[in-house]
Length: 162
Image 1 (cartoon, rainbow, N blue to C red):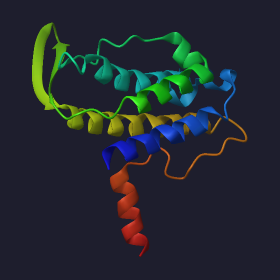
Image 2 (spheres, rainbow, N blue to C red):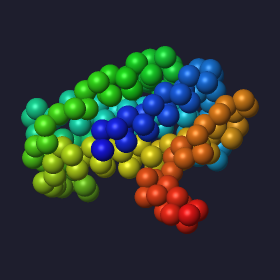
Image 3 (cartoon, helix red, strand yellow):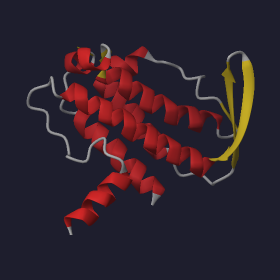
C-alpha cells in the first residue's frame, strides 16, 4: 500500500505540473516567503532521489541533495525526474542509517527503507499543501481536493461523512 500511495501523490504532482507554464512554476509566492512551486517540487523530488542514491550504501544524508535549479524552473524536466523516482521505488526493505550534522555534531539514527519511504510520502504531502497555497495565484489550474492532505485526514473526513 505504501508504493501505490506514493505514486498517487507523485501522479497528482505530475498532473499539476502539466497545467503550469514554466513562468507560473518559477513565480515567487509572497504567502510562502517568496518560495516558488518549483522550489517545493524540487525539494520533494530530491528527497526521494537522495534515498534512492544512498540506498546501496545504507547511509542516507538528506542534506546532501543536488539542488538542481533546472528541476525548479522547468516543468518538463521536473516531470521526467518524478517519473524516474516512481520507476525506482520498488526495493527490498533493509536497514538504513540516517546521518545528519546538527550544530557541528554528527548524529546517526537507525531506520529502514520502508520507514524512509513513509517519511518521504508524508514530507511530499506537506510540501504539496504548501504548493496548494501558491496555486491560488494561478488561474485555470485544477487540483484534487485531497492534494496536500494527509492520508489520515482523508480517512478521518471519510469516517465523519458516514
